[in-house]
Image 1 (cartoon, rainbow, N blue to C red):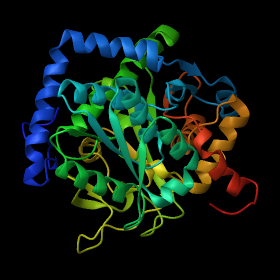
Image 2: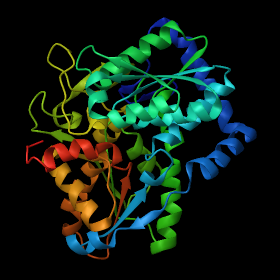
Image 3: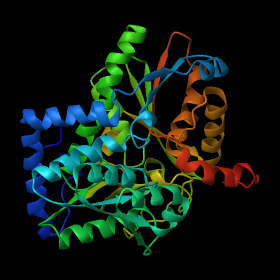
Image 4: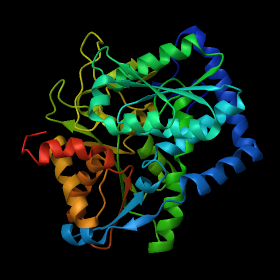
Length: 396
């Protein structure tokens, strides 16, 4: 847990306008109350089972294991959760918090669209107004998810400033929240932002790791040797890792977006090219220039195309507890195709970054070793984007 200021060492904290401090205090109090509220926890657990479809399976990827040789590979199938990704875990929890605080209006940001779809879904279920900010470039890349959000009753607001991607969508959502804080709750979609958002999101996502622990013990009779997840803001990774971080026998790898190359403006690998800085309410690693101006980012995956990373991830990186690497757009596209052909599972391009790392690591390990990877989302939303490169032969 962070300290009382919401910091993990040098990382985290609250860097927001004074108008938002009350809302953050209110949110922190509501979350602490919800943790002890039997009725809240029962409602959440019921919806997780009957609406989200939890627990999601822990699936042995037999053909991929055979193809790669080496370690036995398991996927935690968050792609099978309602709406097609892990994002519903946090969105549903935060929408329930908003309802408990008496706030009828929900706003959210989204990159790949999955968090926007999840938030729109939870808002529709609970009868809340919903508006979602999305960069115009991401809207073009994820037109299917834009339509899904609109079908669910949400208003999708295009953001045409800056890079027209996730960073800019978050900026607009924060401005909206500051102006409408009395009746509005901002459902921040990842383990970033001002405290207590990183803790709240991690706690709602930690059900992934709690399920995975009991499932791997049932299937294999022991804990895994290696756990792998992609890292944008970092919610699906912490959702899987957090339950196991005290286990010294387990290694962890977070996979960032290597983009076209590890040169400025061509990737989103914060631990490969970032420095300490503040972005959108929290201190963490940031892709920026020597003057602190936020750099351009690139990834084939809209959900990983972000200039900073959650503060707990920054702390885990500096402490050495989690290793962070990156996968290029080409490696990701190759992993996307291999998983589809061998396992009949179309992974999200975000998840395909983690598969690319599995493809490197599994052959290096003996067949008695176990890898658990978070299949954070399904790839329906990415088929059009992938086809652009696969069918034309164009380099991503």
